[in-house]
Image (cartoon, rainbow, N blue to C red; front, side, top):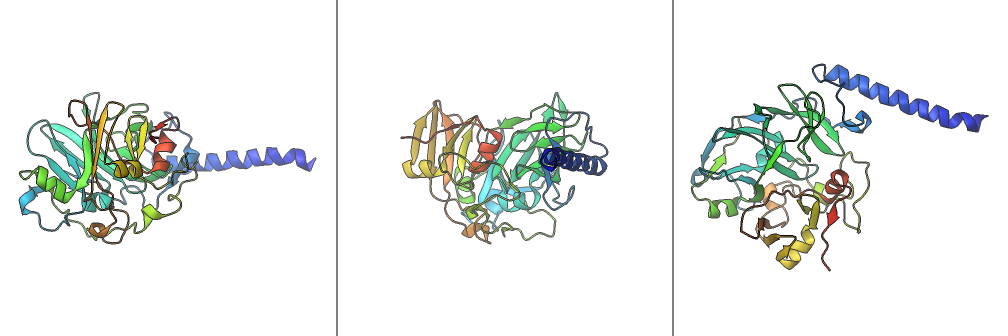
Length: 321
């Protein structure tokens, strides 16, 4: 009799935990429409800081690249090259502490995002159906990835996918824009007339890495999912283009790969932002460029392998021979 009751009790406990999770989230987010739900809320976890505990930046200030003297040459920046006007660099030393920068370039609202726990640096067009959105950091994680929220409806957005997972915008996707992570030195060399985001007016230890040693850890933070296949370490970097992933180790070894209609190149010179305490002293991860056969930049990002596997479980692993 006791054996027969055990599964029933286990299911009851799980149902009770799920209900408690849903109740807590609904109380914490009264403006979010939980009737529009695209995920199991049991998958959502607190990352530590609460809503806006990691403060997003809106309307950042910029200065000429030639006038910036604080950045180490090997420090990574997110580079966004608009259709017209100078290229813009968003230093990871700022994105590590703020995770989202709401900017406007040539009349287009953009969201520059970086989730340190997944190493997903992505730039999105911040408009949905013609409506400009402003994003904040929810303080919540799903599969270790940042959940963003828009300030207009407080819908939740999975940063690694650019997709609304809860709320009024459920199922909508942000358009990812061509952008890439490269060293500050590489940006200055390619764009001497470029602009760089100025240091925010906040009490943060800019230039220091609050996640020291993270990308050589055995396990991701607050992640209970599967490890990636093929023996690839969970925190190994991969190049993601659509539903395909190329291990960084392969790209660095070969230097140049022409495959699947892409030309992928690697050159030394960029420090990992998630290695040593001082970002500019991080170990080598190199500068990647991803272009199509005509030489146009291709939309991509550089997640950790576990994050690619979590959000693209049917993805293709480009391992070479």
